[in-house]
Length: 231
Image (cartoon, rainbow, N blue to C red; front, side):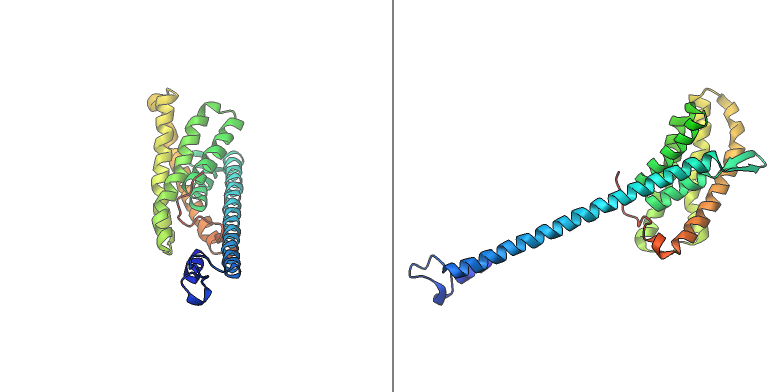
């Protein structure tokens, strides 16, 4: 619109004798388009804001759902193993990272698992669980990110390999927390066999669930696509 106003000043037939002003009709015409452009930009800005707001709400709802799943899977689902009993909370923590991304996954896994410890009467484990389980989700998401950005098809074995460092953090993290923070020393090593079994079960089940859910288009649309999200 501004360029139009400047251009018409240079058209001989449209200039007044002074050569400095433009006929009123032309100015109205140019001003109308300037207002129209501003209006369209405002509509686009509002739509973009609403889209971003809806996306944030959707991620928060999914995060709350995964936090609940981590809590329930840890407290209720108990599987007998050679090392005692294990739960499905590890599976949900890994899945939270893969589906939500690093930071939403971190808080969903950490809060859900920490809440399970609190409700089960293990309040002294809550700080350690929050950090350890959160890191499980965070590391899994960060290792998955390069492949999501490239749009690569991720085979079953590669997804399991991506989750392996997360489970090393879990096993080492709980050993360190019990030995150093809770003061159990080397006696904390007694929990390592059960944690290893839990890690293996978590990796297998999370890979199976992620692969199966990714094949459903309506569900896969909600999956994290590799962008660096912030809470």
